[in-house]
Length: 265
Ligand code: NAD
Image (cartoon, rainbow, N blue to C red; front, side, top):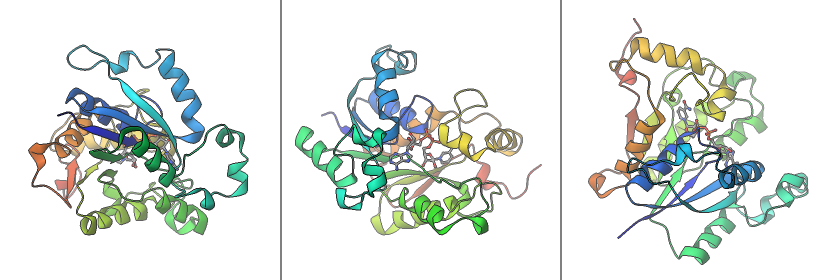
């Protein structure tokens, strides 16, 4: 019987969330997504107007269907947590039931249950600042947006120094991976995004060093090719499938092998 997946962190067709949704849809899953509230309007409009139709094409030629798009802000668990300035912000005021608990309740009401939960979001407001210059608020925001789920995306900066990946994001990823073990949930690491072109994710562009990192990886990784978002999507589909039934609590590298290198060439 077909599985139902909820993918949190899809707001365009460039990011890993979208690629994961596609791989899961291609494997027969029903797709629900959680979209950051301020990005909801433009995402739904673009979907409706067919702007993503080309990227919705699945290997069998059919189009990925998203059964429902839920507004979500993963930083807030319930309405009591939401500060006044956000409540009254007009980009938030137009939507309702977007805190984590409310979304969970809505999904339960609409569908009963889900089988697969993917966390594909990141928000490090100070990611371009070195960790030591990061404010307490920026640091806590980065950690807060990265709380665990059954499958999430992390980054090598959790264990090695990656200059330029600041704002507490390296700490957030380390926490995410550590939480994986007590939760015994599947998790994998990605190091690179698809290309230097317009397909770079919004989050990756905010970091700023993505082009350099892609070049570095192609020059130094054992598999000398670009990493495509689809490869990450396929790894996610595998980990969510019965084929991975003995894998849990793990961090899986999907990085063309770059993590195995001791020095660059
Ligand atoms: P992306 O910009 O496509 O995805 C991030 C999403 O998070 C966006 O859709 C954004 O709207 C959403 N978001 C931000 N704050 C939110 C909040 N409070 N509540 C709900 N949604 C929120 O970028 P991406 O690179 O595809 O990122 C997906 C995941 O992959 C992130 O966890 C990121 O850290 C991880 N990752 C990316 C790379 C990379 O090279 N791009 C490398 C390693 C890990």
